[in-house]
Length: 366
Image (cartoon, rainbow, N blue to C red):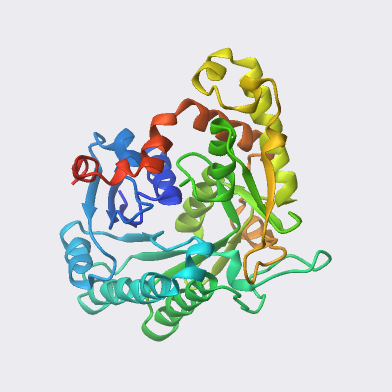
């Protein structure tokens, strides 16, 4: 039986990972450690609250002593590190929090893991898995080959620079101290429980509310999209069979421009609401409810500073060495995501109103 500590487990990807892991490895212990900052949502973990192997602990990854205590008391052998500040726009206006959480916070976890697993020798068989991003590699031209694990780092935003720093720290703890680490650099995730400040959930929620759909610049920035469940499957494969010290790129094999993505979401939402009159009644301001189309809401806005033109992941290593490749097409994943948001207005409504951080909500899992 594995015993996992999942940092950032109340955030988007961490939440999906916890759900996935308890469903596919029901006998394993899963302890979520999350500070419940603005994007951490206790409601995300309500579906697994009653699972006998689940525990939630509210805490900051900067608190090394508390992490050490948890590693010892729970006899943790696997630390999966999702906790991060991740919104590029926020990193431009407030970079300090990104350096503190992503770089200093990761180092704090590494120190705790080294103390317990190596210096105390309490858990000789262990794994520290670090979740990173394709953004550390910088920007690609339309014709350039996709990022590989050998692509030099060239981060262009405070967010990606802070993640690059954390990647280097993780690598250093393996090569200097012998900590058993792996790192995965993933492309843009999407799916259920995605905080509605990011592009896909923002577009979906704004369509349902009949609000403008902001598209940066000319809309031709290209991203590779990875369904969050496929990402969870990839992390599972790396934890089971990945080689300590190695880095694995995880992609969705679904490159498209931002404007094409937004138009796909518009078409899916239009089709869904036409098929389900109950949703038209629930969302009277949605374009379909008023005899219009979601594309009418598309609005081009001033591009953000330093906006990378293209990201693309070459995940050949992951498929060749671990036999993993994504299972969901972009169309399939987007349809599931749009329908989930349409059916769960209470979840995103509480976030937009700030109610997910009211005292009762925050105490629900404590």
